[in-house]
Structures are given as structure tokens and as C-alpha cells.
Length: 371
Image 1 (cartoon, rainbow, N blue to C red):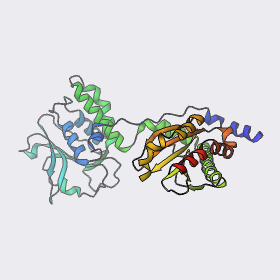
Image 2 (cartoon, rainbow, N blue to C red):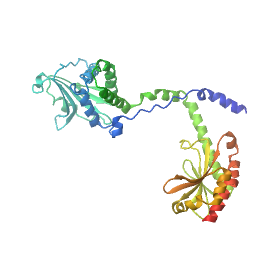
Image 3 (spheres, rainbow, N blue to C red):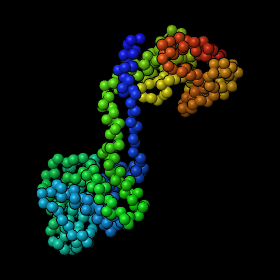
Image 4 (cartoon, rainbow, N blue to C red):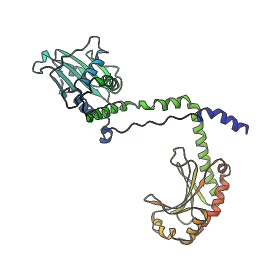
């Protein structure tokens, strides 16, 4: 009794705390479309938002935000002249390479008078590109390069390029957004929010911070409790097999939460025990005893379900009878449930033996008569 009180005292702190809810992010349009990590798709979106004259109405929001990020990392500030702006996808580089995004300010027919931002996007790929091929292909008088990546790039190997992570750009856009939204259509605000949310979620889910914090603050005790849960579910599984063997059944184990008592003379009708497991597939407070049929014996389901003797057993024991679950190659036809708690667990073998007398053995005997 003293040990039980010590255990309650030890774990009461963590057990009495409110566990933070898992905050899953809603699917974005790109998740639904099946293109969440495609660099080309993300670059297409960026081309749209970097283009100041596009219908989004955000004008220079993305360009200004990008330039702010660039200038925090460059020794000398990059400045551009607003006005004529062109944003190209897959612009030609040297040696048959392609520039993901090239932003030109000014008349591209007079490159010596233009400003340019050369952008290489990296989502889930490493930086293997020769940045010289991009830099040397752009004839602008004033230019800067950006490797826009999901994760930090440590070796750019080119002094004209800086590394900006998607998260940095998104945060800068969000900081500046209030200055640009006066005439933005509501639809495009929805699209923008969805896109920015998607970029952030590519790397991590910041909404999970509280959840992670709770775990690491109480990790030792949580692991002890998980070990207790695993020990108890293992005891239940072992008890089902041991009790079945002692009662004369061919009892067998299986992975996870299935244990079986076989009916002699057939491999296609047996009792399945659905046992709670560590993966929470089932209610941890219930042990289900099921009459299961497979393959050819599924054709006998009407005969079994409509049998007066089996219906009487179901009524007397409180078991369910009917087509309770159809798994295609198998079917559940009868099910009795044992409620699990501390009292039943301490005498689980006895409880199962009692249900064998009330339910399992009578059903077993009747099934043998029917087949």
C-alpha cells in the first residue's frame, strides 16, 4: 500500500498538469494539390509575388522584404530603382544552366543601366550549383545574388551571393505586410496567407513548441509511464494466451493487439482477442472477444448469425451478433467485451475463464455442430 502511495506522489505533478494539445497545421492548397516540396512550383509562386504589377496588389512587398534581408547580410547595401521590373523563371545562365528567378529593374535592352537580383531556390536539395555561371550570365551594372533555401547554406563559394532562408523572407514579409494591404483583394490575402503558412510549415511547425516543451520538461516521468503502459498491455496479451492454453485451446500470439484461440478442425473460424496496445488502436479500457470467420466460411455468415442457439447465447451474455466488421477476407460475427480496470486486471485470467464458461465454450461447441 505504501508503494502505491509513493507512486501517486511521485507522478502526481505531471499527471495533474494540462497536456498541451497537438496543434496540427491545416493543409494548404499546395498540400492538397500534391506539390508541397516542389522547387519549381514554389518558384512559380515566388515569381508571381516578386512581380510588382501582378494582380495580387502587393506591389513591391516581396522585393522590398527580400532586399531588406539581403542588406542585413551584405557588407555594402544593394539598392534598386523602382519602375520597370521584369521577373523571369529559368533565365539562361552559362554552360546550359538555368537561373530559378531573375529580377531585372530597368530596360533589359540596356543591361548596363539595370539592377538585378539573381535567385537560386533550394527546398530539399543541396547547393551543388556553380554560382559563377549565374553571376557571369547577368550583365546588369548593379547586381546581387541570393540562395533562397529552406535550411541554412554554409558554403556559398561566391562573394556576390548571400543565403536567405525561407523563414527569414516570410517573417520580413509579415513584418511589412501592413504597409501594403490597403488595396489588396481579399482573395489574394487568403492566397498569400496560405502560401506563407506553407513555406513556414515546410521546415517545422512552430505551433508545436508548447507540446515539445511539456515533453522535455517531464520526459523521464513520461517514459516511466509509457513503460508502465507497455508492461500492462504485455501482461494482458500474455494472460490471454496463457489462459487459453490452460483451458485447452490452441492459443497463439500475433503482432500488436491480436491474440487468437483456434477452433479445432478448421483454420477459418476462431476467437480473436483485441487487446489494448501501445499504439492506441483500441480503447485501453476494453478487451474484445470476437468470433471471426475467414475466406470460405464467410459464406456461412447468415447461418451463424441466424442460428437460434447462438442468438440465445448472445442475448444471455450481452454479446453483439451480426456482421459487426467486414475486413474483406475476414468478418466479425459475434463480440463480447470485458471492461478493463484495476479490479479486472488483478484477476483477468479468472474473468476470461468465466467468460469462457458463459460465452466462448458454448459458442465453440455450437460452431463445431454447425460446421
